[in-house]
Image 1: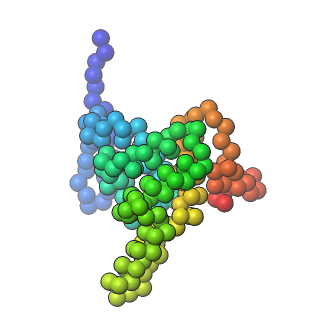
Image 2 (image 1 turned 180 degrees about the horizontal axis):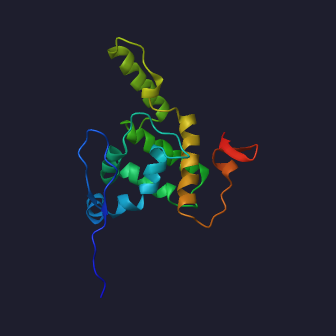
Length: 178
């Protein structure tokens, strides 16, 4: 007979904040199996040690969006499939970023960026800070490639993906962003 134990996570408390303790099984139940299966995708897409962080986008709000948004779910499936092609990864990455930045699925990132820029110019009294805008389609392509490679390296898939094919270049004994 196997005893059932609670696994609790107690992060180091931040200064002047209340300490929280997380019941991992309850968190898993709250997130749902699909979200738990695709946590690596979300973590890499929103920024990790090897991929750029999306400015002003929190991981918690996007986890909720993954539970409800079909477009984001479809993108996650593409990124978690080691046999996805460059074209599929590029398209899924753009679809995911349009969703994350609150765009319509009928507009690409370039149109979304222009629309958001225009809205900010029309309503702001100061300069528009580019870091607050969605990335361009070209920037998203390479971000998506690096996310795809990272997810599949974490999953330790048996496919032999060359970093040079997924947004990296070799430079003096290490890979760096192309």
